[in-house]
Amino acid sequence: MVLPTRQVVDRRSRKGCKKHRPEIIVVDLKDHVLGRAAAIVAKQLLLGKKITAVRCEQLTIAGTEIRNKIKYLQFLRKRKLSNPKLGPFHHRSPSDIFLRTVRSMLPRYTKRGQKALRQLVAYEGIPTNVVRTGGRVVIPKAQRHYCYRSERPYTVLGNMCKHVGWKYSDVVKKLETARVEKAARHHKKTEKLRAAWKSARKEALSKVSKNNLEVLKKFGYA
Image (tube, rainbow, N blue to C red; front, side, top):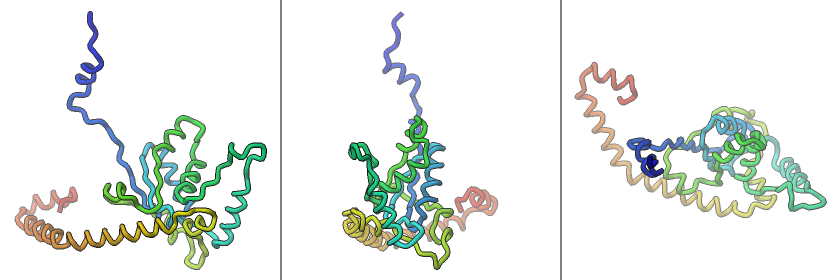
C-alpha cells in the first residue's frame, strides 16, 4: 500500500478551511499608568490575546520626575560585578521599559509565559504599519485620570527616559507630528464622501419597513 504524500493529505484536510489567525489588539497607552496597564496586558497575554502597544513614551508613573529619575539612575548602577555582560540589562527606551514591566508579571521561565511574551509588541509613537490596521483601544481602569487625583504629581515616561539615555525622543515627536498632520488631511479629504454615505444610509433606512427596521436595530445595523 502506498501512503499519500504530505501534500495530498494537506489538500484533503485543509480544503475550504481558513487558517485561524487571532485578532491583534492595538492598545493606545497615552496617559495610562505604567504598572496598571502592564498588569492588565499581562493577564490578557496569558489568556491568548495578541497585543500591540503604541505610544509607550506617553505612559505615566506616580511621583515627580526628579524622584523617578533618581530611582532609575540607582537601578542603572546595578550590575554583575564579576561579568557585567551577563546582566542585568538596563533599557532606556519607553517601549523596552514597558516590555520589561510586563515580563516581570509573567511566568517567563515556563513555556506558557514565554509564549505569552512573544504575543506582545511595543512601539514609541504609532508606526505606519499599525496605523493601517484600523482602530485602537484604551484600558479605562489604567487611565491616569481614573487612577490619580488631579493634584497628584506624575512623570511622563518619555521625558524621564530622555534624561537617562534615550536618544530618539525628538525623532518620535517629529514623526508623530507628521502622522497627525497626514491624518488631518485625510479626514478633510474624505469629509464629503462620509457625508454622502451618511445621507444615503439615512435615505435607505427610511424606505425599510417598520418590522425590518426593528430587526436591523436589534443587531446594530440601523
